[in-house]
Image 1 (cartoon, one colour):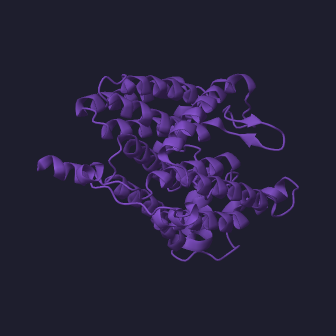
Image 2 (cartoon, one colour):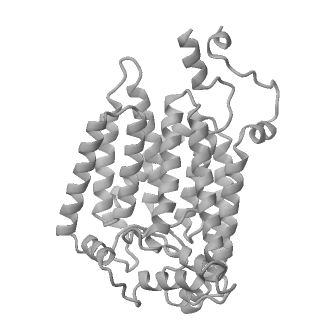
Image 3 (cartoon, helix red, strand yellow):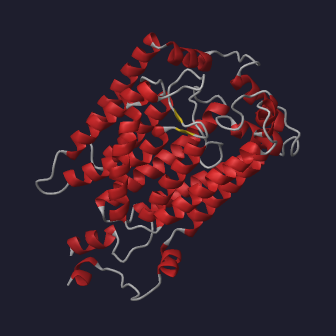
Length: 388
């Protein structure tokens, strides 16, 4: 009876896990993720060597660490893609609780590593940035609450998710980490819109965001300094933005050549926040366009597959993860070309950073799990049957 009503697709009884996983996974998106990881290692070979020499470490110390963290991220990602949406939701909710507590205790036990923002827990051999893991977990938690609100006699999930979003944004702003706070706010706003929020409410929220931005500008030197630097038409060539802008101009279309770039010797964050400047200088606009295409392909294909999804939780969570992934990449590259104020945000799978790459692996694993082909009809089947 269920098949007659919803038009489900028959499953293959007794099919082994790996063949079923390979048959149902979005192979284009998976290939793009692997290519991004390869590009990250390639750029790490160029960008991290000066930092290793500066810190009196082996020449390829940071590249080896990036390969290790990337390997862990890929294993976690593949394992997550094999999970059912229900298991992903349960683990995501548990992970949200752990990450939320870790974020709340950062002011007490965290460190800033001399960067002026308390964002990390230091364990000597490694450091962890809770906000990186909180992002995908928050998307799962909010999608679960919003989907529950759509059920008959369901809880006020949208209101609960709003309060959680406000608490997280406030904690991130106090670090200060306005980049991650903006990502959390954006991801929640996208899901709220997909869940059916009225336009008037979204406009009101946008106005509230602008008001908070004005308040932060007037009361936070960190925030005001970055905004002033962005609005200033003259770029100081001795700043990070100055070095990055010059490197992109020098690279041209084909770049100055492998290993010939100079920006990596001047930029302290060349291997993290400004990795795209290294790519533009040594490999030119051609490689930058390839990187943009890879991010765009993952985001667009994921959204396209989610448009046909019937389960409201999967549709909301997948949309939030896909949009957050694409916007984070856009922000990182936008800062490098001075289209956006400096945010201190990594380029997923490409920038150096253990927390960043592993959290990206978790997020993409969740997204690929949600976009797998499952034995169910698409949302169009339900609409067609209702019209008959």
